[in-house]
Image 1: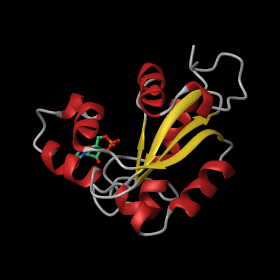
Image 2: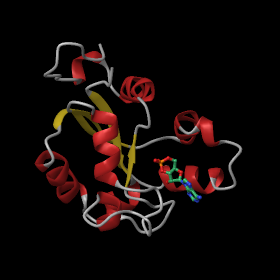
Image 3: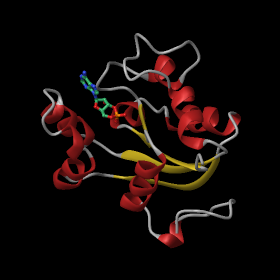
Image 4: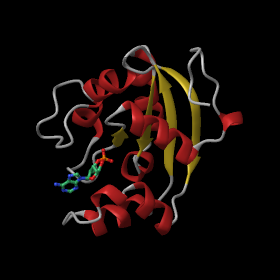
Length: 147
Ligand code: CMP
């Protein structure tokens, strides 16, 4: 059964361009409840851990440098079928291929500086929320939450 939680990062490029407000507005307008929210700065070893799955990719080093280059905003988002619904809302990883009206079409600068991250499975969503949040920082409205 599809879960009700997904996880997002508003990445350094979007934060520095003052897109936090506009992106959160779109998230709310599309029916997501913001169950957890904070601005943080990743240290290198934390970024490397979060993106460990990509460590053999040619873009890995550059991705890590980018993700530690400035503050990020992390959020736990709730909606029915959250992972799939949020991936639809953010659009393709490559902003040139992202559909009109999607967050990446509106705010991404490139494939790497693609404005936001979104979990790609329920299992990863749970792990990613737990990576950034503790139980007292999540205000879930659904019964089977993460903690
Ligand atoms: P994200 O959803 O955070 O997951 C992995 C990230 O790697 C992705 O968004 C992009 O920022 C980056 N990425 C994925 N593919 C490429 C690519 N081909 N070139 C550069 N960066 C990429």
